[in-house]
Length: 463
Image (cartoon, rainbow, N blue to C red; front, side):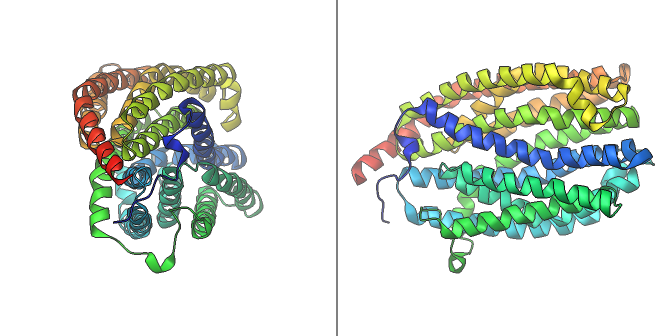
């Protein structure tokens, strides 16, 4: 197999500036992606008249289900990211090409299967979650349309992971800036001009994602880097697929466990009435912006560690984690201060009801307290994944997040069934997850070091 020297700058040069240059476009991409949902919630809340709170509640009740379905495949795309970035770091262009085309096929086939299966399960799942009778028809309508777009939604996410593995986070940002504007314009057209409700905003979101996927596919076909797409090469390589799934499935399970736990929490929130549901939905669409920053540092850690591990540079892997912690903490503090200072105003953009705003701000306070633990959890998890260590973090997440939150909802919440009791489960579960992740880090560091040393020996021999 032919190997050449790495073409990426990630394995050389100052880490602190390269991480920031990688993170900011990625964080902005995540924020723009969340604006799709934020635009849905705000437009149905403000422009559908008396139905506003019910329509908002419908979109909010749908969000955890969408998260569960999408995050499983986004986790698998992280497996593609690690496989491609490690191959780029070691100069293995043949593996890069096989992994790129296998990843795109997984997105298309998986998206089609997910769309078909989920259409059959929408109504039963929403009923299982105790969605109120007046909200249920709107939630079913929104979810059914949204889920038809799963092939293009997953295709976009896998394409973005491919660009990210090569160190390019600007291309997905540029595409999302365009599709974000398209999404909002279509939202307003379908709701204000055509008089549609949640069906209009769901359709707008799917069309905007289709646009994103088409543009990124075209750009992958034109790039001169190792991740170039060629239609003739579009097939699944079984060995590469096994490698992607070995890392990606546990990563997907880890992300899906979060979503599953959030669905359970949402079912408890649903029992507190439409006003609380609307407030929680609005707050979620604000707090998620700060999470995008944390998640960007986690993904940066995975990509940088993956490439430097491929190049056999263990020292740069450790330095990557340290810089991600430091820079992530500073960015989190800035985001927290800004959002809490403007929180009441931001919440009123979704709904002007003073009760909705007050309850929503309560959620923001609880969640940002929990984010202190989230940053530790996310970065350590991203670091381990960069070495291809994915299964044990997934198990730790299941124990900490799913276990604690299920126990909280069914054990603690019934004794004091109010909104603050539900919110308290976030810092408790995330603190547990952070502690378990640090224990894993110290237990697994010797194994990661040995892998990197062996890889370094191989790279040295080839050079």
